[in-house]
Image (tube, rainbow, N blue to C red; front, side, top):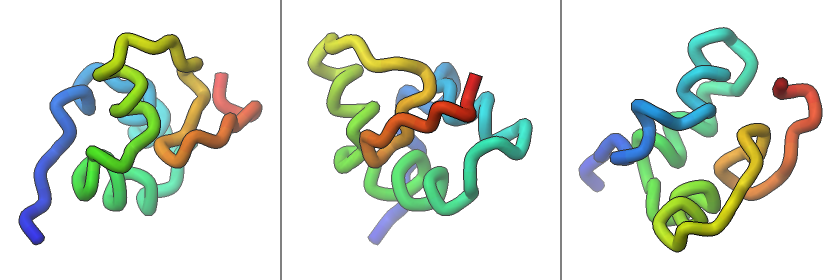
Amino acid sequence: MKQTECKWFPVCPMKYFFERGMVAEKYILAYCKGDNKSCVRYQKEEAGIYHPDNMLPDGTIDKSLV
């Protein structure tokens, strides 16, 4: 399967958190550079639905991310 970077990745908080070592690489590889259509953040962004910056791609909220 061809890996495609999510169109939102350059402005996504996940990129910010990952670059600072706050988010595991597994999320970036699985969602941001993998199956980004299954990313809850992507789905909400596309639908124009609010989602907090500390919501992980699988939809869980990580209260340690600020």
